[in-house]
Length: 123
Image 1: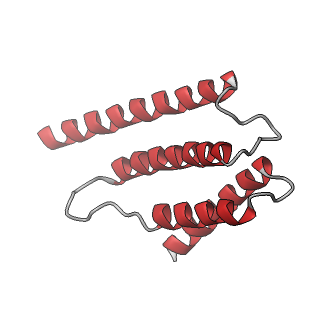
Image 2: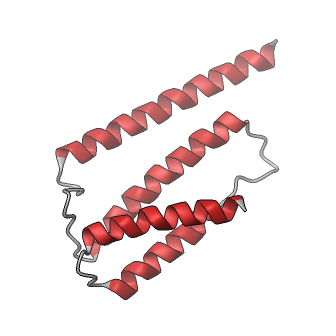
C-alpha cells in the first residue's frame, strides 16, 4: 500500500510538472513514458535490508532521491524541448538558489543524524 501511495504521489507531481512544460500536450507519448518509468523506478526503490539504516537516515536518503528525481525530470523535459510556463528552468537563478538550499539542508541533516547515531552508539 505504501508503494502505491508513493507511486501515485510521484505520478501526480510528475504529471503536473509535465503539464507545466508541455501545456498543449506536445511530446505526449515520450514524456509520459519517462514519467511512468521514473515513477516506477523511484517508487519501487527500497533501501537494502542488509544495510542497517536508521529511520532518520532513510528519510534523508529519500529526500535526496526525490530532489534528484525532480531535477532529472526537469532535465528530461528541457531536452524534449519543453518550456516551463512558470519559469522552472536551469537558466533561472532562483531555481539554483532553491536547489542549493535544499542540498545544504540535506547535508546538514545527514551530518546531524550521523552525529546523533555516533553518540548513541558510544553510550
